[in-house]
Image 1 (cartoon, rainbow, N blue to C red):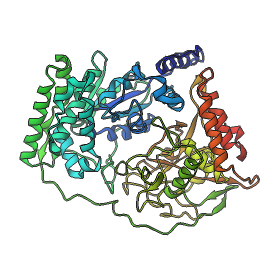
Image 2 (cartoon, one colour):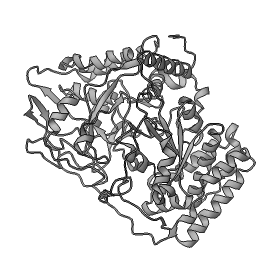
Image 3 (cartoon, helix red, strand yellow):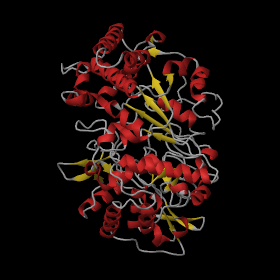
Image 4 (cartoon, rainbow, N blue to C red):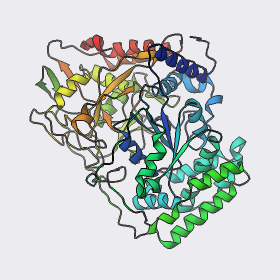
Length: 579
């Protein structure tokens, strides 16, 4: 392999070529992921990913959500650059390595699904990273999107006023200035700002996809004519069997993210005046783009923004406050329970505990985020499910009020393994978790509560809380790193937002070491026959710092780059055979 990589794309392209060649020599075909790109949020993408879950590994907005706001490729970074122009110094050593593994981990014999929305000016970068990936565009009429936002007050909850300001800033000068008329700095109201953002993103995505084959699935079609929606997808996943139609699942307790609430008609919970405002603003913003992009691009974006005729206006219900206003509870008591030849920690790791680890590591000189790349935890905003936040004023990590004793999620495998090590424990293997899950009644799954429950919410007959349910957990072992791909670790169980059938709980799925999601947390175990005292936080900080420095040398396989640090974090607990 040529190791004189001038640009990160050089390494990505070379490693993808090598992976395919090694797989081909073994008689295996490696496929790029399917990119499902939404013209906005609330376009029904959760329905798509949840329906395809049994046949395709899922990655929910890993590009938009899992890189920090200061990352050079972040969609919300006003100073962001295209991936083809990003200099090595802006990525940093960890950021370079993470970007390479982010791409290579999505190439597999079974096609993965990568779902992204609201990419704005970074759509072209994502498409360049996966230059050979098939694409499906997910759309919804701005009328339907505006209704969904209004019903759940998402404009405020998801910080869309700030998002609008970011787009104004990004288009005030330079090559993006030609799009400034789509987002004028005129202090627009919520509906106007939201609609302009929807149209801007649609135009930018249509422009980025110009000349590239792609399929198209409308939300309206998925609701009113499911077979037609499947027909658009069938050619994109030929090696998999599309799931059969199923009976509607029970309604979810909180449907902000749920896809189980079956719909047979389309209602826009807007007044007639609001609906007219959205329609007029859509037309005006498209008109503003008329001389900024080629006619074919404008026509494509305009087609994606149709569908308002399928909606009937309806009265808006009173917003639900389910899941808000949580009250503090006393710290739960942690202990270890002997079961199946191991001692299992009775509780999932909580936000408060993980926050303590982040603060200790920060004090030891190992920050969680470097150049916008997160090492241990992806710190999402509270309304996006993030419960642990960096406070510049306090110069420390804090937990959202009322969530101290809820299980941590958005945690990487590194974060899980580090927490286990400093607590003289380890991450259980996938096989051990299958044994723990056997004959266990699942708790909090399938959007029943709309989020995680506290770590002490449910107790099994053996004294282990949430052995199945609440969150999935990282495992200490994983699949072999075949064909030069990065190290991955298994993920086991069911989460608040996944099914909990025995097949789903034990289904083999994995993630690379720097990946994270809102449904994956930490469970700990200890070996009875080999107790040990884990490393100190200072020792762990040294291990991580040494590993990050070593990533500058790109002359080794991705597995070699990762296995050393993985072994350092877990070797003392007898997992050498699994690494």
